[in-house]
Image (cartoon, rainbow, N blue to C red; front, side, top):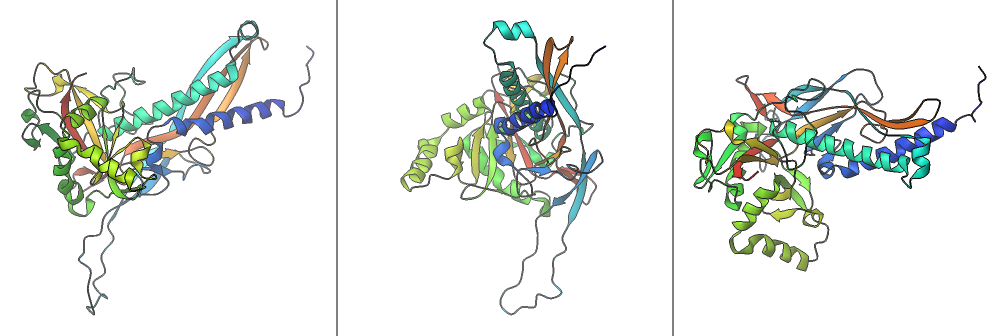
Length: 374
């Protein structure tokens, strides 16, 4: 059979173009992108140790707060150095793939659809949404559902064998009309919603939980803050209980003061120790999992308070992250049919450690459950 010659490098040229186009858009479409970075001071730490090496697991160090009092004046510091407590964990990576846009030459001919650009755009959206939702599931420690159709089957238990971990007792509270409770049965009527005052109650617990494992704030905007991420319904409840329009007064003052770089201008609400964000990926949990809950409420929403190193994402692709995602354009039936596929090698999990008693603890995420409509 005769072989038709094709100009050298043509296929690779197309492939590299597709890779660049897809990779440049994926992280832009992740709502958690602004909270991700390459060190332990970000809420989501990106790990790229396997980006250019071999292996399927990345070890990482867990950073704890110092506890000492320091010295003042001419007091002797030598001999009073603090011991740096560290812990280690690992996250496994594996490949994630999806394909779309299979079409024939005649299909492409008779329509105005640009299959290459449109399919790459749809694939980048899919990868971004998948990673967003997966991270929220890991941080919440429960699959649940969200306000969208969702991309995960009911039995989904994690990616690459990195198991979901329910919040420990020190990092989960239930909203009630009389305050926060550590007892699930106390959340039992329609008044047990998330409101502004409950956020302030958590501050002491956030920074003192398990001693040196207290949550560290994220440097984001003008000064360190905790990230408070709520569902659309929880945000409505918070605004309804917003005494004297406090949110508006705070942020009007910022604008009048000439602050145009703080995170309030990037979809967040600035409030004391928190930067508050709304996200549709906050998990909804069926009320059948709760004892004595009001029959008029059909779902519980799990708000997340994130500090530094709440979770990790590890990449196995060159250069790390999605900046070198693999994309292939494949032909079938002697070139008559064409489709596009994207692939990324990654893993993710919530950061946990074992305390001195050997109990597994969350490091940088605190959960608040409240009643909310589906």
